Image (cartoon, rainbow, N blue to C red):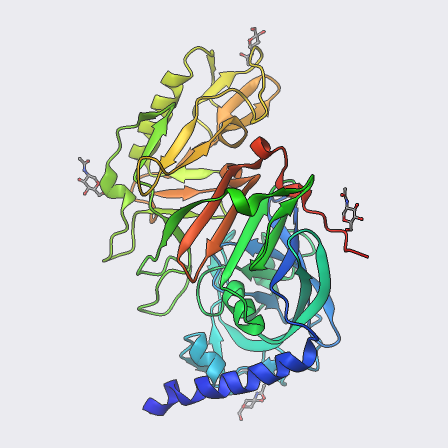
Length: 431
Ligand SMILES: *[C@@H]1O[C@H](CO)[C@@H](O)[C@H](O)[C@H]1NC(C)=O
Ligand SMILES: *[C@@H]1O[C@H](CO)[C@@H](O)[C@H](O)[C@H]1NC(C)=O
Ligand SMILES: *[C@@H]1O[C@H](CO)[C@@H](O)[C@H](O)[C@H]1NC(C)=O
Ligand SMILES: *[C@@H]1O[C@H](CO)[C@@H](O)[C@H](O)[C@H]1NC(C)=O
């Protein structure tokens, strides 16, 4: 059986490469996807085209998601749908050892002798089994300033999910776009389909943008954010942190090495053991997530951090807490700055004392009522899986570049300093 792991892989590349050359007239260096924020759920939604004939589908973005999954039970019609046959190259690539049958008549999501994976909806913490398949995906190329021509990848692997797995997702959404670092995450698949670097960048604001591949990141009025990134290593958690996974799988989520936290430049006393990833069980460490609306901290870190912050901001009157936050202030006499309310700075100190991710008022404080401003971090309780989960409010209007090949994160800190925002990518195509 040893040949299985080598032979199908060769077959895979032979099949994939020539078909790419046929469907696209030029090879893009980068692609772009638009993002909108769903006001009811706070989720970021993207839109791309899939199937033959092409259908525009809306998907909730999951930075740490393992792969693309879509509801195949409703309205999935495509002449280019290919179920992944057991032990085929794509099953191998996806590390799918599950081989299944399906009762009923064949249709997308229900075929015999196919391998499967477990699509996961992190908002309702539910996973289920689904058929692995491939189909055409098409999206726009970019020069980093505007969208360009539309290009297609003929065989993007994804998993079929049932309709009930859409519960808790924004209205009109038919699945989730997983941007995790695994072999069938969208970044790796698009990189291999178009032979560009395994790299992507995400920028979330009232709207937003995802760039795949090698490009500038130009935001109106003409600010190229790619020139002002700070870099820090990405760490691989040896134990999967997904809702469902095969034994021995690594995490596809994005972990960074926060070594300490400072408020107004003063270190907060925390148990640094919690900031490390434990190789044995994959607990601990710091990851970035688009599932959590606010950064979640293990309880002892949360307590130490919030009290240090309250002390640093003691010139401003405290008011009663407003759930889910514990530390709130009367903001009626507070002014404002270009980077939000004039709050103490928060630094996530990284590989050395001189490399830190600085968080200003716009990303630390949440206006919960007209005159009440709360520290936008929440208590993760005792013994959470991951000690710090950096959430949406802390990454809004920050550009984050995930370079999988070099295993590093590039981050911009707030774009408000650059007098732009993540909503300012010019989605008008050049004439
Ligand atoms: C799978 O095989 C079983 C047994 O041969 C058959 O009853 C069933 O209809 C098949 N399912 C599909 C989707 O072809
Ligand atoms: C720090 O955290 C680790 C892991 O939870 C724990 O084993 C250790 O006892 C803690 N140390 C202190 C001083 O609280
Ligand atoms: C905030 O302070 C102002 C006076 O400075 C007061 O009128 C207002 O009621 C306070 N708001 C809260 C929520 O405490
Ligand atoms: C956006 O790009 C289009 C196409 O290049 C251009 O015509 C338009 O002026 C740009 N918009 C702004 C606000 O610069």
